[in-house]
Length: 348
Image (cartoon, rainbow, N blue to C red):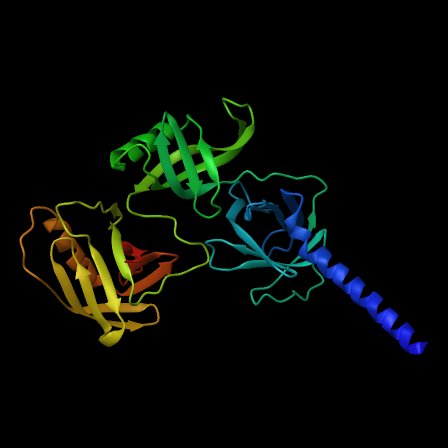
C-alpha cells in the first residue's frame, strides 16, 4: 500500500512540475502581440519607465523613458527576441545584452550582465499589460529600402519588419538618394534615416499598418546589406569587400576590379585589390589593434579608379584599430576615427 501511495504521489508531483514548466515555456508563444511595463531603478533619476512589445515574428520594440531627465529622455531599442526555457533574451545592436527570467505568465525579472538574478530589494520586474500597449519608436533606422510604383518599402535591419514609407516630410529626399544609386527601381539598397513609426490605414484596404515617417534621409549605402543579427564574422580568412571609404560609398564598376581585402591567418599575410591593382603585404594583430606593413601592389594603369586606389593605400598605412559588427568590418585610425567599412562576402 505504501509503495502504491508513494508512486501515486510522485506521479502527481511530476505532472504538476511538467504543467508549471509548460506554462513557462508557452508564455511567449501565444496571444501576440503582447506588452510588458514597469518602472525599474535608475542611478541618476527617479526611475526608468520600461515598455516592451513582443511580436509573433520574434521581433520586439523596447521603450525606456528616464523620469525627470529633460526632453531627450526617451530611448528605443529594436531587435529580435529568443526564448530558451525560462529565459527571454533580447538581441539588438547594443553592446550589452538584455535578458529576463520568466517568473510566470505575467512577470519578467531583469537579469544582470552575467544573466543571473539581481539580488536587490528594488523592483526589477516588468508586468504583462492587461491589453496590448503599443510602442512607436522614433530614432535612427537602418534598413533595405526600395522605391517602385511611387511607393517606398523599408525593411528594418534589426527586426526584419517591412514598413511602408509615408509620402511626406523628407521622403522625397530619400527617393532622390535611392534613384541616384539604384540600378533599377526594384533594387533594395541599405538606407540610413531618422524618423518615427506610426500605425496608419493602408490607402487601398484601410487596414492599419506600420508606417515610417522619414524626418531626415541621411545616407544610401550601395553594396551593403543588413547582415545577421547576433553573429559576427571572423576577421581572418574572410573576403572583405570595400563598401565605404572616408564615409563615401564605393560603387562597383564593370571596368575595374572590386576593392577588397583578405587577412590570412597563415603568416599574417594581406592580399586583395585596391580597385585597380592587386595588393599584398603583412599585418600585425593584437586584440583590437591592427597595423599593416610592407604594402605593395602591381603597377597596371587603369582607366577608372586610380584616385580611389591611392586613397586605399593611404588608408591602409594609417590603420591602427579594427572592429566587426555582424558582417561589417571597420578600420580605424589612431584616434578611433572610422576610415573604411567592408562587408563580408562568402565566395563560392
